[in-house]
Image (tube, rainbow, N blue to C red):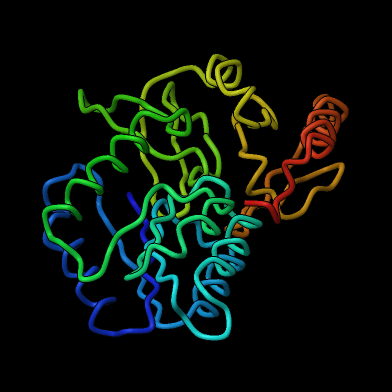
Length: 242
């Protein structure tokens, strides 16, 4: 699933971008969801609430906080989102670069240029190292690591629980744990592999996840799990930096 934010204080332009996304969405294998904001403050509140966007279309000329200011605040919360600045003037290009935008888009929006730019962003998202790839029922699938809550071992299969759904595929959870060490997943015990980013509470005996799920830590894993958790915390991968 691709989650996209559109932020423009002109309802006509925001609606136009949302309509363009709706018109091309059926051409891509990923479902596209769009959140529309008419103020930068609304977008910031959503990002601070840990809504993780893949792409953000951001008008530069907003209210008291312009788009560049909003972009800086977004970067404090999300380093991976691809930001596209929307503007009628090129005077903003230079100061916008410290936000690390993917590109700029001129007003009025050209449909062909919009589609071409979206294709480039989609290719970037598909080719990056932030997607978990797997096969289920002979169908190739992928999901962003940031959306995965945990993997669960069940009857020689692995159940993957994400923020919005779950899926099943064949595999070994111990091998998966080895493969995902650098992705900050913690093997709580032989049946649960948990995404550190979604641990909201950590106790010596249990962990609590963003969805409210509580997973007990077996006695023989408590020292190792705590050591892994603290090592990730020291590396600065804090939950509030998602």
